[in-house]
Length: 112
Image 1 (cartoon, rainbow, N blue to C red):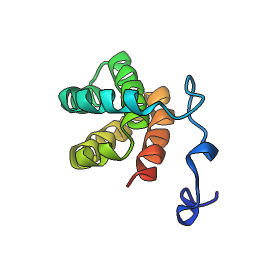
Image 2: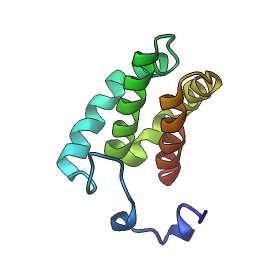
Image 3: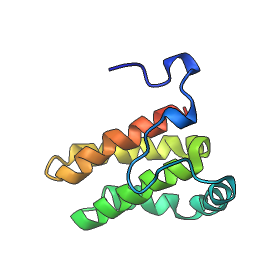
Image 4: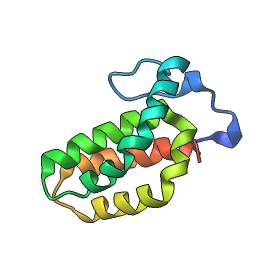
């Protein structure tokens, strides 16, 4: 697999985003989501390692969408986010979450 950033030469147009995104969100939408992310991110830490499977899956979807919208702003929350993702990885029985976490980490890595 090729290096993710390729020495910084990867342009935003060449990145494939997950469904339902076809292109990078507009700047106004990114700023709006960035303002509210700070309010719900601590709840996502708890939800992504919750014992209820549907809560974990919804939290992983919201986290992935939040990363796509907030981009480099998400690095402000990496200390707690990586701990909660590590706890989520330890639960092996949730197949959907185990497929979503590498994608979350890949998009986080783009902006770190």
